[in-house]
Length: 197
Length: 221
Image (cartoon, rainbow over all chains, first blue to last red; front, side, top):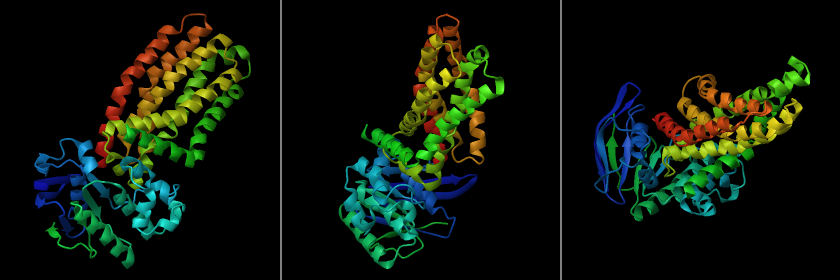
């Protein structure tokens, strides 16, 4: 479903990725590992279409995935290392934009990460872990088949990690793909591993 | 279209939540324009002569105020990535931002300009033409401002760079806008100047979002 061949990317003047190749079938998961600065986040941004590869191709069902960026963007659910939350918005309002795009239900998405009781709390009142869970709740709203996760469980308690593991399993059971970069143990069964750097 | 409206709604809701930032531009406009009668004296003929210029320059500077945060805040908290991944071309995201900037800053400036011009003793026949010029004028400020803001997003000292980039670009807008009001005060036809302003809008409407989209893509990298 998703195939990468010979991907390379620059970060400024430095070549951080070269000859990255992998292939993921429907329901597959890929775990990116490697030391800091090995290009895990860069690869995720590249897969999201936010960064142009310096070389190589990315194919989605055999077609060039990055040829039409808006179409590729609809295939992608991206959680970067920043939470992309507005401190002035309540938890529910922070999800309103994603909900409007997908037509999903904000209440269900909040319940999926256990934040249903905090829907009306402003973003600035949330703890770091709660903010992370809110960022992950966005994934529950998109119907995007490809989840790109940058340290998704950073700051989460064990219960939330377990709950998020369930979300990822359900996503994969529906034929979705997960690509995650992490240093923490992630509840991701049957995942291929790609070691960078 | 849904995605475009979603971006505009999100922007409007954000400005509503940060209403102090929104009001700041209008208050800045009022306060700076009110300084001129104190500086150059209250003589009606002098004030009335320079009134269109004062209103235009102050409107231009006020419209600059919110530009710095237009993409800056979204860039810093990671929302810009989510906007670029909403399924719209980057140019459409920029156009939605420009529209929101115009609705939140341009329209209030346009409304405030009327009492301000009267306060500055602008001759009565020139007032409708000053406002008629400001209508495309504020649109151009939003479009050119959005393009410039997208170019400097993520740059170090971007907020210092921004006015240096926008102000030279808007000089034609200023020239034609003031010329329209001056022509009307002198009893001449303001039509050619207004037509030129409208032509500028027609050119900027596709070009500025495209430039801004390229800037946003570059910022994402």
